[in-house]
Length: 118
Image 1 (cartoon, rainbow, N blue to C red):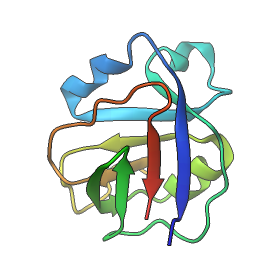
Image 2: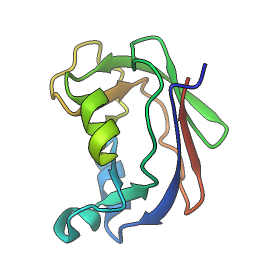
Image 3: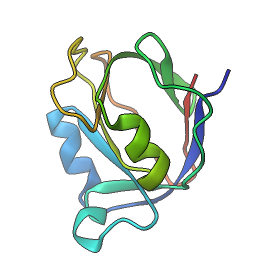
Image 4: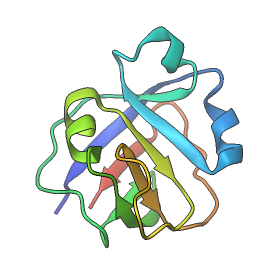
């Protein structure tokens, strides 16, 4: 079952800088200008179900196992299209708005890339 599905609509000029810290930031198209520079802007879409450990987030064709889910990931993604994704394999969510996934090479997202949580 697909829990969430979206598409990258725009990429902030500084978004790639955060890859050095093993993270990327998603934000709906209404991102504040100061934050938009660092974000992958996505089409805001509804969430069908709950985001949980053990599911996968798929960037284009590349899957990553979800290892921890911050307390406000679900509500922030639903209302703002905003979450941080940390690619470090953490099993404990340190930050409430962060989705943690397995530690492997970050995806190379482009405008029109797809993102799904299944």
